[in-house]
Each structure stands twice: as C-alpha cells, then as structure tokens.
Amino acid sequence: MAELHVELVAADRKVWSGAASLVIARTTTGDIGIMPDHQPVLSVLRSGPVTIRTTGESGEGTVIAAVHGGFLSYTDGKLSLLAEVAELADEIDVERAQRALEQAKAETDDSAERRAAVRLQAVTAER
Image (cartoon, rainbow, N blue to C red; front, side):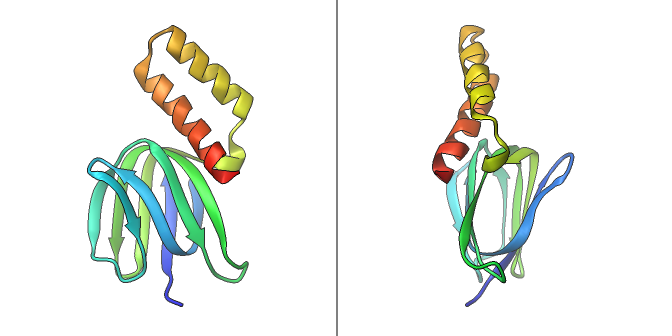
C-alpha cells in the first residue's frame, strides 16, 4: 500500500508526524483530499478540522486535529501542514472550548467564535 509521509507542525511545536493513506484539510478553495501520488500542491489552510487516515507499524487509524490558518504543501510523497495553531482532538478540553464559544458569541468576536467552533468540530469528528 502506498503511503505519504505527513508532518503537522504548529508555530510552537511538532503536533503529529507519521505515515498516512489520506489527509483531508480545508483550504481557501475548499476541502482537499491528499492521497499518495497526488499532484504537487501548495495551498493556504483555513480554520477547520484536519483528518489523517494513518497507516504504518501501529496499524490503521484516524487522527483529527483542529487547525487554524497556515499552509499545506505536497510533493514527492511528503505532505507538510504548517499551521499557525494546531491541536490534536484528544488534547482539546471540551468544556473549555464550549465556554470559549459562548464567550465569543456574547462578545461578538467572530474569529474567536470560529476557533472555538473548529476545536469542537475536531472533538466531535473524533468520536
């Protein structure tokens, strides 16, 4: 089975790295799915959940991350997701994200509301 090597990196840390058969991410032109042997691509990421279908020694699985801005680059079997902010769904505190969403709505802070909503989408997608 063909694989792609994926690196999900935030401005402050490496979030996830490994082999995958499929990655789905949100870009400024819509959602994109990257599989092995995809055409080379460079795109701007929008806030949204990223789904990584993992392969490799540990078996098949799914990793979900909340990503806020950045870039996606694929070439020669390597996919780099360089995000301004990214966190794995299992790192997200659901109650804190819900409180942040409520506060952002009360303050009519659209960007904070979007960040909180994406975090909750990532957690929901993982379940």
